[in-house]
Image 1: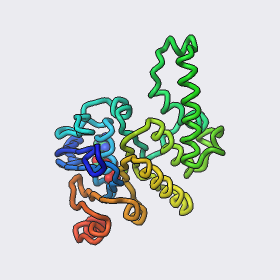
Image 2: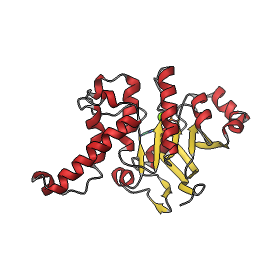
Image 3: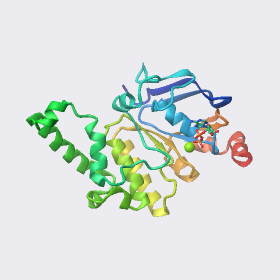
Image 4: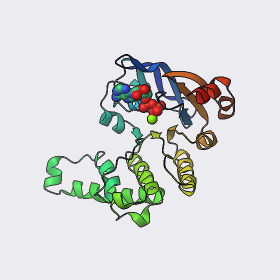
Length: 255
Ligand code: ADP
Ligand code: MG
């Protein structure tokens, strides 16, 4: 697929929780190779969208296509293995495992070895294990965590935990990476590092959907921005245009 074509499309996505329409027939087109910002006031449906796209929620109606195939209705792990990886708004790491082990957990999902290969430690399994370790090391280097590979995740500074989560998602070798408020709770230097890493990820051809509360971050990184308010898309376009849209300003001031 060429750069500029649609990688993922959400079509009239309705996500209803009881009487609440967290997403009200939202269309979303994600262009391959882009960084697509998703913004909106608290409770506007951003995380719900991530959960629908990653298969955690099955939409009440509407569908999600990835590379032209319907993925809504598939399990989260099938969607992840199919090329859509994500991080969560709240860090979800294995705290007592090391940074390296956290990345390896993601990689094991891509293994082809059978249970018997593992039990008997066959050459196939040992080869895969070796390759996984090398890959985990290069991913940790990519997110600037080589020096902390052996540290338990829970002992890492918060900013590093967030980077480790991104590393674990990269272990799945995704085509699309969903980042839910990756800068939340980070210090200014941490945010700078995060921005640099997001740029590096996109240079590798990975498409990114970025939910972010820090306006300057999302506006400086994104090619296109979609704005949600009360579960509806109220604006979409280039950062500079969206930022000055009266509907967007109103949503933020009113919300
Ligand atoms: P955002 O990420 O934009 O802050 P969310 O997508 O988390 O917003 O939430 C959108 C709305 O949907 C909120 O009103 C929230 O309370 C509601 N919501 C989200 N998830 C659920 C759920 N699992 N059950 C009920 N309501 C939910
Ligand atoms: Mg959220």
